[in-house]
Length: 97
Image 1 (tube, rainbow, N blue to C red):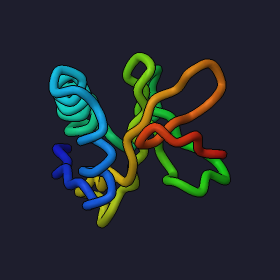
Image 2: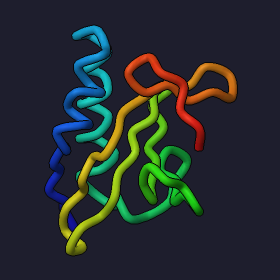
Image 3: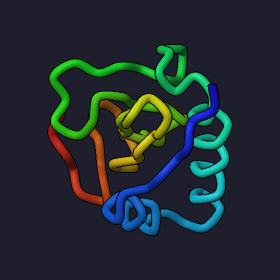
Image 4: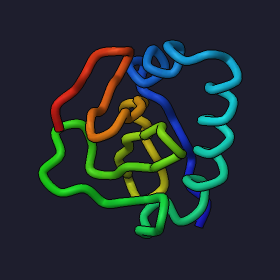
């Protein structure tokens, strides 16, 4: 099943924080890993428990894409950030999980 991918305005702002080359890598990975089987956990896709940001996470190297599923056919990207060690940063600000 193919999913439609949409970005929240907040997620678009998160993405704008990165360099253009990083943005391309992130968007390419979103298309590759979330258009099909976005609702199936894998090495890169993880269903999160008790997360305030979103119920799902996509790992792309140091980058993290947080998303939720809507109507069983849409992936809504909620936030985009990166990790340094055990710390998550969104728009350069450290975020607690």
